[in-house]
Image 1 (cartoon, rainbow, N blue to C red):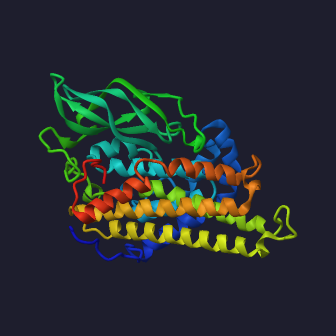
Image 2 (image 1 turned 45 degrees about the horizontal axis):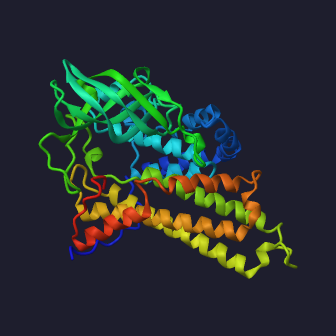
Image 3 (image 1 turned 60 degrees about the vertical axis):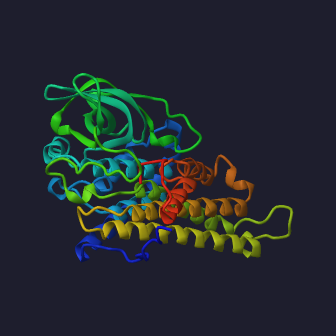
Length: 411
């Protein structure tokens, strides 16, 4: 056995009272938008994009500046605060929360790049939005002054709203030979979006196909993440980032951005089920108030505790990441444990929602009931490869046992 994970941190690591006040103020402003975001949710699903009214409102309160550096007017918040923003938006609408979280994640990824690249994006407008796809499904061939980028990237969540895109690429030298992997930043004027996102849930996320054909990317907007001579495998380290990149953004990260909306969706469904429980009976019985029925009470209690469990594991993972010594490498076992925490949180959210839907009865699946849309949204994103509970737990189990992990380098 390789040993067990370190003891869990359950406290929220914050920079001080100023930081705490900042995130609390932001969350309070988002909460005030909840009626608007909830009302626009059905329209977003129909249009297959988040209504601009919702995006504009979230811009105004600062929900899309979470990961932008302070020198540009952003909040420069940590992993936990970004997750909490997604959770708060998710209590109103899943698609909107997913877009907000993924666009904030895109801004976070830009912090690996040089200050010059970040200036290109944020210097004139701190509300610039960046989408991101980290699977290297395109190529970047070396040319004088930079790279020529060609490829297709899916699924590009938030595509309709993004001003820039960060995409992963397979690097090629001038002769077209493999030269490692990297990431590049491309303005929206240099790529097109193919409208292909037609799915059962998260319809408003706009997770479409991004296409670039020979787009020129200057040297300072490209980043080598895996050098040509780097060995593969799950323990392989990524590049150290471009000169001038903040060290905290070189640390190992997990998909907490993908978890926040799911935490919020679970709470939204619990809120809805509790709200209607007092006025509904149980079909084909003499029970006039579902809330007075003991089996319903037990299911609601179990679901609430499962959501609490998900929150605790999410906060634990966030606290650990936010407590890291900036720029220090993160042990593989610890990265795997945090990945396991995320998977376990998702599994608990999914289980809680299943309990609530069964307890609520067939009425929860009516088209007129927003609960069925929230359920479909979470059912789709719970199966995202980066938060998949079976994969996350397998990764953690292998790490605990010292077994090799040939499956993925994304830990």
